[in-house]
Length: 119
Image 1 (tube, rainbow, N blue to C red):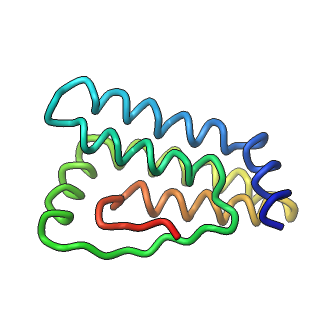
Image 2: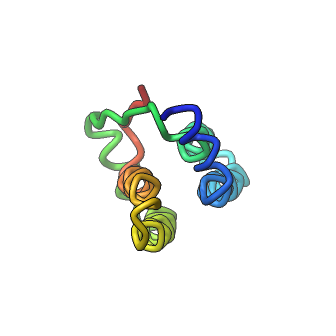
């Protein structure tokens, strides 16, 4: 399911999802202070482009928590809302449910991305 799922995902929603992460990453890279956050966005864009067969493990400490709060206020909510809306639209049909579940996985990641690892 991984290869076929990733191919279909990229065509039917993954491209838009990954493009959102890349756009946010480029906006963060405008300032020197935001470059580490922008680089993290580019890492998560790869998950958003091809999520099947990958898992996200959440962790981190106080630094990750502070970055997550800053992220949530500035960029996290718009990305999460976009992923949730697309996930709900994909879950309307039975065929789209696996894709909707992957969109929900990316939505959860877009709320608190720092301290998370992609395996």
